[in-house]
Amino acid sequence: MNRLPIETQSLILAQLVEGASIRSIERVTGVHRDTIMRLLKDAGEIALEVLDNQLVNLEVNSLEVDEIWTFVQKKQKNVTSEDSPLVGDAYVFVAIDPITKLIPAFALGKRTQSEAIRFMDCLKSRIRTRFQLTTDSFRVYREAVDLIYGDEIDYALLRKQFKAIEGHKGEVRYGPGCITNIQKRRITGDPRWNKVSTSMVERKNFTMRMQMRRFTRLTSGFSKKFENLKYALALHFFWYNFGRIHETLRVTPAMQAKITKRLWSMYDR
Image (cartoon, rainbow, N blue to C red; front, side, top):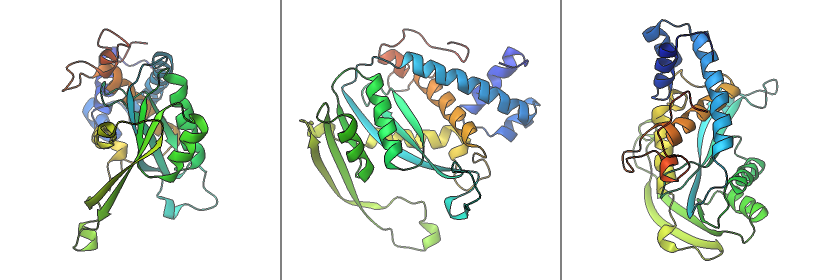
């Protein structure tokens, strides 16, 4: 970590995982934003190490998978041929255990087949049990699951059909459509239909937008660098899994999944 007092570091990290922006933390603490960013980098690297070391050999019964959109530096329509491949649209692939609420893995990248394959391979390296998987109808999931898992898991696809909301285009841009039909389809294995759902992971996407300023729409708080977004995500998922009591479970997801028996702080490794 850097040379800030532990109390100041703790205050900054606590505000970061509660959705405060870099500049607002600078105003509250009096610490320069460059120092805050260095602390985020240091904490993010440690968080990635903890997640890689602790989230292994997991026992999971079911998983829900989805991806959430954000962008780096500029939106995709403004990207030019001179920009880095990391600039523009970015997607976070997320998996959640609906029983323990644990996030066993996440992946940051483009919304491509190769990223979906990388994400599924990461899940396979961390989970040792057969489980039921549910995804939405995004086509890359089916090919990725087939390549990485074959028939080793019970896989079902959930397709939701929406009806556009009537009204002025600007007023409904970010409004959810009305669901007109839900279809459940077995892909491999023998999935239980009452477990075919993506509600939990969609709710987690909402939590991410609430607790990471970088995901708040129509603000200037978006990520300017890809690596900073990665560190912010690592810190968020570390805190979510190990350091924050889940309101429903009354313990952390890591405790519920029997990975640890105690509440972790920002300085545990």
